[in-house]
Length: 129
Image (cartoon, rainbow, N blue to C red; front, side, top):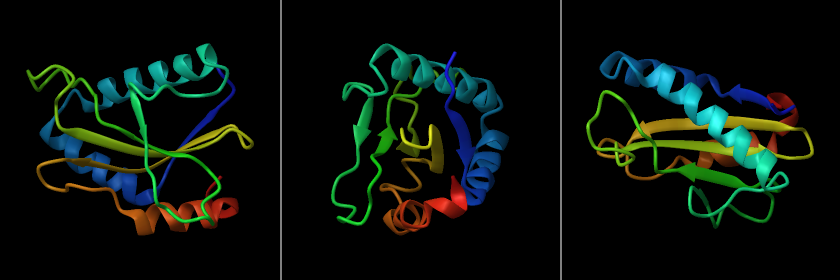
């Protein structure tokens, strides 16, 4: 479908594992999210629309890649539709054809993204991408 690589930060993997223990359908739901993300990139000439993906502002001038938060995420095990409360943060590098997930959390436990982790990945992208 797309030639983008999907990569994840080691801390993302730990966070995801903890959430998956509480929500068994999370792995399947996340796969669906990735497929939709790749389809949206293909449809929109490698750009994302703001109705589904919220770009995170104020990360500093040194951060050269757009960083997005996914708020609308449907989890089969949570009967709230796309307002399940899960948040996924990723960096999109069109240049490297990489989607790098840095963080996932449940909004009731963690209200905002970890901007230090995002900056670290974005500024040291050659170590991650």
